[in-house]
Length: 505
Image (cartoon, rainbow, N blue to C red; front, side, top):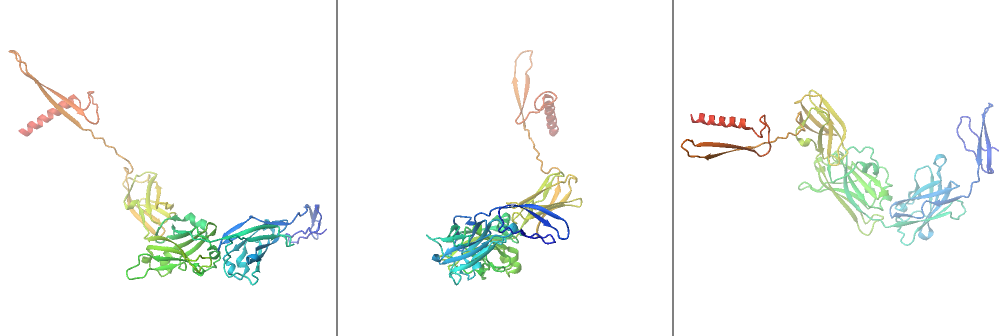
């Protein structure tokens, strides 16, 4: 029994067990012109029944969108799928084959584009996922190829799906495809940093974007059209260099809201430099990403016109192939501002000559923007890179000034891309400390009482009594008395009397 050969360079070849009964066999490999050989064991099993089925009992899609259909193969690597029927006036035959070697996973996925049915090319309507599997579609009905409109809404009828793995015309598995009416949702504005390298899909973009309607010049405006379907069969098949204006009935326009006196409002659309589209059909969302700096650089719009208020309008017109009877529009507004970066609110910085001293700042640049804080003088240069702008435009860093003298003057600079902000600073050993001062008010009241006794041998005597009270606190002295004490009080009174006598003289 010869089931295969190996080439002399060691390349792998297939072994053919067609017609070999089930059982265990020893396979011996011989090397030409030598006595070397190797034997290994192979077990041959009965193949079992050939069958195929669909991954879902039914599939649904909005008219104008794309739906994936998965075929599961058992004991075979190919099958023929029927999409639609003659009764629905849409019938396509699709040959599917699982990829070889490592790509052979027992499944083939193909996509049905309900917008592209107007194309005369079957592969525009049904195509593979690029995984190495084979997907070969052909028209059955209409025989000439293509419909005169996108695939119709099903209503009470569905498009049948059948799969035959045995080639005998009898389906092994069945499913159904329903097509619903499309709709347009709403629009809102997000912003993203000027550096969006690598943000090529919706997941990467949304990780960097923040929902906000004001954007610093140089950053990105992101217009999100969400909860919208029926457009992705057209959008997702745009060729390189094409944009939304290449799809009849779809548009996204940006219009200046406060034009200069006696001048028309500035407008641009998705053809402008710096405007790109990112599709997220799984979440029924389309993103238009606008680099505000490139509008002035390459689109003929003055920088002064870019800065200001704008309104973005996404429109599905009546002449769109999957449109209802009237236009559908959604809008969102945003403003482009001059970029600002401030350290410590623009005030001078005062920090202690110690470790863990915080210097902070704010900016209107997008959250996630990279910032560097620097503190420098003739005595030192402290650099804190790799900071990022927070959700509210804040940024901060800790510095170690413990090695430098109190009173040292320095400057602080914040650098964010092409934008900077700076203030002066000083090392102040009292910075960040709180001094509490307690004020004590003492009130002295002198009361004189007189008592006279008449006697032939007695003299009239006058006595004085001094009372001292404290309103807030009591202080002890060496006499053990509260306040000033008796001895100090007497000295104070004598001093007052001498002063009065001196003034009289």
